[in-house]
Each structure stands twice: as structure tokens, then as C-alpha cells.
Image (tube, rainbow, N blue to C red; front, side, top):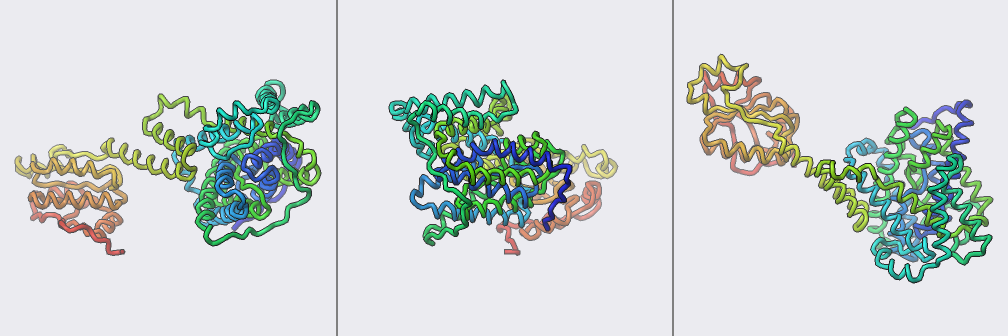
Length: 546
């Protein structure tokens, strides 16, 4: 059950200062993401307010700031491009995405972020950064954006010929401000200074450049979007994509916040808070949001320590909406494009890209696959493809390292006295096969290799001491090996077969007539007792639970 932290007066000044600073940084970014999404600048501001306040109050990460982010905006931009004239589909998707995130939190799926390999995250984030840069090339030169990566790339020759040089010059001026300001002062947010300078220059010299459309005054009222049931598949698939990407984005930011504040976030509560924020954002016509790394870091470095700071950031943006809407309408789109290009550049994971030549080839393959799929195919497919390839390559690597080995029984020093009781011929034809990991699909190749060594064996002792579980592929491979050995007249004995593994194998039709606690006991049974071959059937295993 969620509980709210007690507010300590000593933390209030730092939290308010952090919230103010984060709001100043978030304002131009929220407006820029709103324009980039195709829903307009107000949608970015509405989303920043809803997610900023509610995710802070109900989330599980202290001092985290939430709002529109690159991955979420890219998904919405693709939806807007594909479903022009149907905003109800987009906002219904955002609402359902919030519901999905709340469901993720209630199902305690927050810990799953720990199992996503770094190459998948790196390739995904770098791909998002590249997408943002590509999509802002046309707005940077004063032309309407296409919302599609391939469309933007294909239209580059036309964009060069039709460029608005005044807009392009203004965009370059803003980029210079963004990258030069930190060398002069770190007290003024570079993006905000670029926005103010660019807007002032455009107004003073009366430049003919596209600007933000009208921003409605007042607080947006909640509205339930209605749409045809024929469009449910569009809403559901995109909502799952948004919920997944938003959860990954938020929890990665939570990890960064933990490192800076020396605290521990509650991942499941964080998902619930983000879900509530996105649910309301969809109701008021705002962009979906997630934990924003840059804004959260700035918030913390400005003195914030509690969730009050994130809520204060959202409330300050609300005050801006109520009082400065007419001023924001004069902001040139080229300035926002420049800000977003700088955001895209900052998202790219240069550390991983620099290590491509030195990194394991498996990790490089995964990173490249995710990167290309993110840019040219689909964000959620990119993550799924990356996880699938990473899992297969991991299984192959585990299999190639041969975490199991075959030893002649004569090499077992702990069983030496008993081994001496065996005839020399039997000693040479008795082998111990030791598993040093789970009996999973990566073991198939190793079991096949073992079968090839079978003809010279009379007895095979399977040592299961380190097998804590077995999956279907590993069990099938073991059953086929037992069948081959039985037909060759080879007797099989099992050692240290744990109850869970034994139960799993039994359900699949695999049973051992001879099972022992130690290798010495198994060898003693060969030397002094009657040994019956392991039960192995040529029939495929049957799952009795099905």
C-alpha cells in the first residue's frame, strides 16, 4: 500500500528551488516535444503539468521530475502521422497506456527492468536520439516536419532547395547558445537562454519564420475520447508500446536518481505514479511522459531531496500556462528544433559506441540490431528483437563455454577405493557426465556431443548436483540421449537429482531407475549390485499438466 512521505520544513527551500530550476529547463523542452509530436505546443505543456505533478506525488522515486521525453514523443509522432485527423485515437492510446502502467505496477513488474541487457537499452536510446535529430532537420530550416524518418531523409534534397534561410540562421544561433552557454555560466539553463535569444531576435528583426500556434488560455478540462471499435487494435498495440517504453525510460531515470541521492526507489510504485500521470495527461489532451533524466539531475543538483520538488515543477509550469500563453505563441519553431536536436545529441550513448571495436561481438550485434530497428522499423519491435537475439546469443555463449564435462571414472579421486573394485575394462568404459548449470536449451549441443562418445561406454553416470531447473528443450535433448544409450546397451545412473528437477523430468515422461546421492554410491552399485538401464522411451515426452 502506498504511503506518502512526511514533509520536513528543512527540505522545502531546496525542493522549491529545484522545482523552479527544473520547470525553467522543462518549459522549452515541453513546448518543443509538443510541436514535434504533431499535437502542438499546448499538448507538450499539458503533459508536462499532468505527469510532473501526479507522477511526483504517487511515484516511487524521490526528487524525480517527469514529463514528455524522446521515446514517448517519437511514438506519438508516428501515430499522428498515420492517423491524421483522428486525435481521439491518440489520446485514447495515452489513457490506456497509463492504465497499462498502473497494471504493471500492481503486478510488480518493475523489477523486470533489471533483466534488460545494456546493449538493448543503449541501442534503443541511441536510436531515439538519431530519430529526434532526423525529424527536426526540416523544422530547423523552416519547413513542416514529416513525422517519419524515411520521409524526412528522402525529402532532404527538397528541404535544402526550399529552406527558409532566416529560420535556418535562427536555428544555428540557438544551437550556438546551447553549446556555448555552459562554458560561460552554468547558472542559466542553456535551452532557456537559446529560446529567449531566438525569440527576441525573431521579434526585433521581424523575421518571417514559422512560430508556435495559439496556446489556449486556462486549465484544460478532462475529456473522454470516443472512437470506433474497429480501431481498438490501433489503440491497444500503441498503448502497450507507450506503456513499455515509458516504464523503461522512467525506471532507468530512477536508477540515475538513486545514484545521485544515495536512496532506493520503489519501482512498482513508480510505475503506478507514471501510469496515473499519463492517464490524466490523456484526459486533458497532453503528451505522455516519463521520468526525465536531465531534468531530474538538474532538480537534484539545485537542492531537491523529496517528491515536493517534482510537484512544484509541475505547478510552476501550470502558472506559466495561465499567465504566459500569449508570449509563448511568438516562439519560432526553428528555436524549438534546435533545442530538440541538442536533446537528441545528448541521448545518444557515445560511451557504448566508442567501445564497439573492443566490446564482445555478441553485445555489438545486439546493439546494432536494436539501433537499426529503432530507427527504421518500430520501437517496440526493436526492444523485442534485441531481447530475443540477446537471449539466443547468451544461450549459445553458455553452451560454447561447456559448463559441463565428461570424466572417466578412474579420474574421480573421492571414489578411488570403489573404482579399484571394478574390472579394468569396466573402468575404461564408465564415464561421469557432470552438469555445471541448468538443463536448458543451450545444453542440447553438449548432450549431442556426449551421445557421439557413447559407443565406447558401458556405464554413464549423470551428475545433476548443479542442475537447479530444467526446461523443455533440455529435457527433450536428455530424453533423446537416454533413448540412444538404451538402444546401444549403455546403462545410465543419476546422481544428486534434486526433487524439483526430478519432478519436472517425470512430468515429461523421463524417469531414472537408478538414482544415488553420490558418485561413489553409483560406482559401488556398478561394482557390487545389479544395475538396470535407465527408463527411456522412443515416444515423445508428454506433459501431464496440459
